[in-house]
View 1: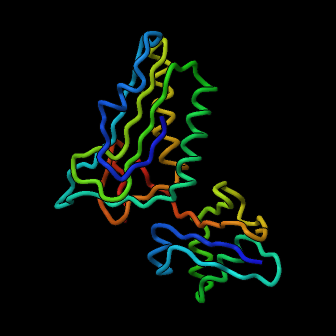
View 2 (view 1 turned 90 degrees about the vertical axis):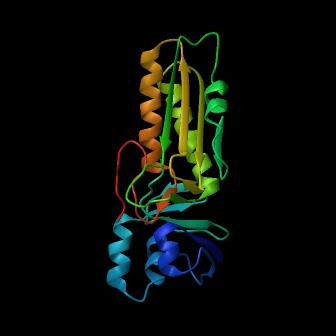
Length: 81
Length: 132
């Protein structure tokens, strides 16, 4: 199955990309996908504490398991206004 | 009216949008990029599809919570030069109390949940948060 990933703001800068199509062999949670993006697991854990996850434009818990065709976005602390 | 735009916000048009003969009070909030050192402006990143949906939800919540006549919310993204509006919120209601409450609710919640980001350093708008 494939999942579309989207990155914004500081995460876009850090990962040097704004999106990625990810192929998964088996269903995974948003959290495990996020952790898989980083070699440095401590960094991933630290970032995850301030990052929210959204599937198809709805905030979800990081434990939510993605489905085929989902768009999974990682949302750093927002600062609009 | 709910809008996310890369263009300069026409603040008079946002205010005009909520004009109503049934409204006894209109509250208008404009957030602007303010002077801070040699800051020339701020770059805003956005998740456009989700930001729009979150703004629609917030306006829906405000309408359920208070009896409002009309609501307009416009957020600018991309590059916003010093002194120009980054956000404009107009709320009209029969009575001022509800319009004030809804306006405050909208700007506070926008800053908490709508996926829009100020890039880089600098201060902006009324609350004066700094980003490292």
